[in-house]
Amino acid sequence: MRQLIFSLIPLFLSCFILLLGNGLINVLIPVRMGLEGTSSDTIGLVLSLYFVGLLVGAIYSIRLVKQAGHVRMFAGCVALAAISILACTFLNDTVAYGMMRIVLGFCNACAFSAMEGWLSGSSTKQTRGKVLAIYNAVVLSGLFGGQFFMNVTPPLDNTLFVIAGMLFCGALIPIVLSRHPGPVVDNVQIMSIKTIFNRSPLGIICCLVSGIIYSALFNLLPVFAKAHAITDFSLSMYMGAAIFGAFILQFPVGYLSDKFDRRTVLLILLVVSGVADFLVIFFAASQSTILLYVATGLTAGIIACTYPMSISETFDKLKQQEMVSAMGCLMLAFAIGGIIGPYTASLLMAWFGHNMLFYFIALIQGALGIFVMIRMSIRQALPVDEQEQFVMQGSAISSVSDLDPRT
Image 1 (spheres, helix red, strand yellow):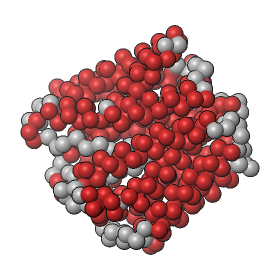
Image 2 (cartoon, rainbow, N blue to C red):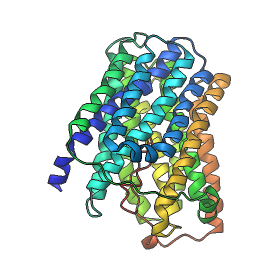
Image 3 (tube, helix red, strand yellow):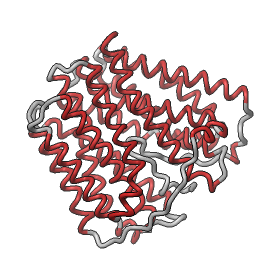
Image 4 (cartoon, one colour):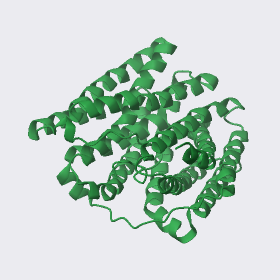
C-alpha cells in the first residue's frame, strides 16, 4: 500500500494544486461580481453555468480520453481552463465570467475523469477504499486552502485571476512529468432515469435535490457572507468552515448510515440541517461568529453527505453489475440539480433578501423529508446487513464510480 501511495504522489500533488485554483476562483467570482454591483440573480445564473459545463464534460470525457490518453487530456483541459480564467483579466464582464464558468466546468469534469480513471487503474479491490479516502482528503484540502488566496490582494484586482491561472498551470507539472501510464477505458452503458426511478424513487430524487442544495450553498455562500459584512480573511475562514464540515461529517454520517436504516438516518439529518439553516440566519444577524461558523459547517456537512447517501440508497436496490451504469444517471441528476440550484436561490435572494439562501435550502430539505416519510410508508426498510456501504463522494466535482469499492 505504501508503495502504491508513493507512486501516486505526482497525481495527488497535481490534484491538490488544481483544487487550490478551483477553491480560489469559486469564491472570487461571486465576491467580485458583488463588488461590481451585479444583481444576485445574475450572479446565480453565472454560477449555475458551471454545472452546464460539468454535465457536457461528463458526457464527452471518456471519448476524449480514448482519443488523447489520460495525461494529454488532463493537460489540454487544465490548460484550456487556465486560458479561460486569464482571459477574464481583460474581459471583465458578466458574459466573460459566464463563459469561463462553462469552460471551467467542462475542463474540471474531464480532468477529474482522467485522474479518477488513473487512480482506479492503479489500485486493487483491496486498496481502492483507502485510495478514494486519500483522494477526497486531497480534493477538500485543496478547496479549503484555495480560499485563503483571496487575502493576497483586493478582489477587484486582476492579480487573483492571474494567481488562479498560475495554479491551474502549476497543476500540469507533476502529472505531466510522471512516468505512470494511464489505464484502459471501457465503454459503459448508462441506465435511463426512468429505470433508476422505478428501482429507487428516493435515490434519484435525493440525488437531484442534493445537486440543488449543494450548488446553491457552496456557490452563493460568499454572497450571503458579504451581505453580513463577512469579508477578507473572515470570508476565507467562513468558507473554510463550510468545506471542513463537508469533509469531517462524512465519517460519522457514513457510520450511522451503515449501522441503521438509511432512510431514518437521512430524515433525521434533514431535520438537523433544517434547524441549522435557521440558526445560521440567527447567528449571522446577532454577529455570533463562532456559532455562525459551527452552524454553517454543520448544515454544509449534512448537505455534502446527501449525495453519497442518495447513491447508497440507490445501490441498495440494484445488482452489483448495474451499479457502474447507474452512477452515470445519478451524476446526471446531480448536475441537473446543480444547474437549477444557484439560479433559483439567487432569484429568491434578489426578491426577498440574502437570508433567503438558507430559507430556500431549508424548504427544499423539508420537501425531501416529506418524500422520505412517504417512501418509508410505502416500502419496508431493507435489513441493515443487506445495505450497501456508505462511500464518500466528491460531489463538488464528479462521480468517482471508477474508485468506488462497491463497483
